[in-house]
Amino acid sequence: MGLGSFFKNLFSSAKESTEGLADKTEAFVDETMEKAKETATPLMEKADELAEIAKEKASLYSEKAGEAVNEVVATVKEKAAPIVAKAEELAEEAKEQISETVTTAKEKINAFVNDGSTEAQETVEKTTNRIEEDAD
Image (tube, one colour):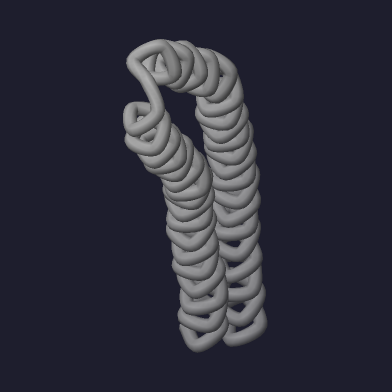
């Protein structure tokens, strides 16, 4: 029976390690997504700040300059929007690919663990039978 316990402990620790790895990978994906958003947000905020500063300075000189600044602000926002959208899209794609990889890895490891458990059980049963036969 000691051999059976050995294999059960061996394969349960492998399964626990797999689940821990999957959790770490999931955390990594979430962290990466958050970093992508964090990177894009300050850029948009900085563009808004700079546009606001430019707008304030321009309004001191003339109303026409203020209109030009509004156009610049609109242009900056328009140019930055696709970059932010692309960053979010790439982060989402990365998250999906990593999730698929984690799922595949979990399935393969679970199959390996299950196959190993079955093989271990069969080995234990065969060994037990041989011991019993030798004892008779």
